[in-house]
Image (cartoon, rainbow over all chains, first blue to last red):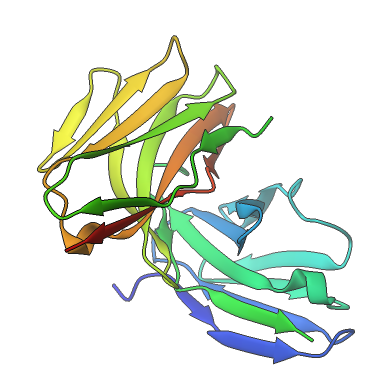
Length: 113
Length: 112
């Protein structure tokens, strides 16, 4: 298995632009998580899905952030409009049974200038 | 108060030393516990689960004290390759929901 695949690896965008991050979970994993990591706040859970259904989006910072999981093999995290304070590494992770050994993707390093 | 608290370090130790990391968690309903390792500019990876009875994996020993809401990780005979950030992780189940909460990590630097 190729593991959790995220794209792009790096994204530099201008403030106000729309950013879309993509994630392909491990086949057979029924939970998918989006995390954001910064030096100041560490890893923060933004949203997670179980069987493609959003379960908890209380970590999504504001309405500029949205996430979808149209099928078991694909999820997106969208920021519109982006702001400099959104600069961070965004990780996607998947697991079976939600919490017993997450597998993380390599992350997307987002810089908003 | 943060849900999971760790000393950020860095811990600078010579090769061969024994080093211990501690972590406290605030939610007594937390049900499972882990240590993850994160190398610089890489993703976190599961190092080991933590059980109430304590568990060992080679040079690594993890302990859980539920009464004190305290988790520890001991690394014996440190290697240069152990240099990384160690993340204390807590899982709380609520009904069908389950999610991991990460501490901000403790950085370890092992030197010659």
